[in-house]
Image (cartoon, rainbow, N blue to C red):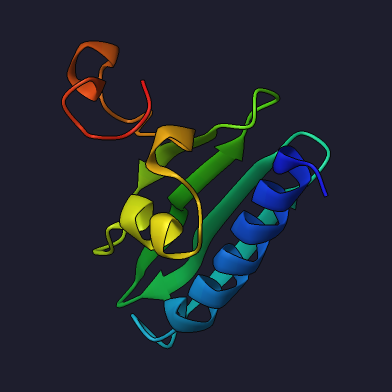
Length: 112
C-alpha cells in the first residue's frame, strides 16, 4: 500500500472513531461524517438543535494531499489531533497544521 492510500485509510478510521463520541456533547446534535476518499477530504460536522438554537458546522477537517502530507485545516475539538495522528503512526513531518499561518508552522515541530 502506498503512503497516500495508507494515510487515507488511517485518517478515515480515525474520523470514524471520533464520530462515535461526537453525539455525547448534546443528545439533540448529530455528528455527521463527510468523507471524500477520491479527493482526500475528511470532515466531522454537527447538525441539530439545542434550546431553540441551531447547531451546524464543521468541527474537524483533515485533508490527505497528493504529496502524501496530511493537512489539519480545522480542529474545533479539545483533542490534540496532530498528536493523535502521530500516535496512529503518522510521522510529524507528514502533518501540516494548516490552520496556522505558514510563518508560524516552522515552530510547530510538524511539517511546513
